[in-house]
Length: 215
Image (tube, rainbow, N blue to C red; front, top):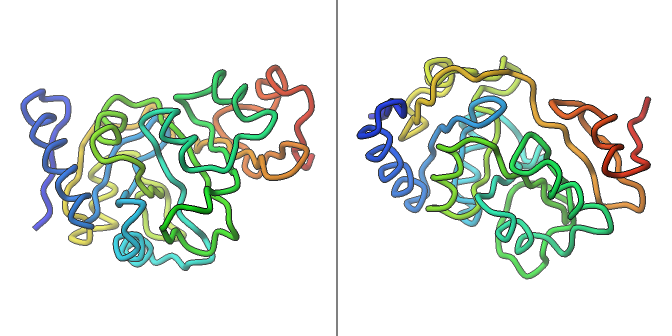
């Protein structure tokens, strides 16, 4: 049976984080609040857990799962390099709603789906998410909704869609906004916005003088 913890209550938050970290280590699924929308997460290095996440969402391997990290150091361990612009973007916008697509570290043993050798990585600006990530290490996290349905902005909405497929729900209250993270691809010579989101292109250009947007 799923368990939900009210993270506005300090006692429940502490218990919930302990339970959620244990669940992730066992290869089960959790729902957590982020600075954008609620996410459904699993240990990034447990392929069966990532497969369960995709199944819970009704999503195929052709849409690989992004990875959330609790520290910049954790992110740099996951990628070959951040390229000439990645560190500046990290310094300016992390933690925050910016997802960076980089070449994945080839020495890592994981299976996030059909990534074609890349990984989408982000450090969220949310205390509950960061506390959990610092306990678990990198987590594969996707929006907490069934594929094609609206993203969940509350734990209740996430539970209504995902039900018993998730072991622990960390309730951080209603999301302040439902705008997703901006996704920037750093795998080619020119950074490219793949998804417009919470950080507009003009702010990105304040850090990286030229960035392709497809406009």
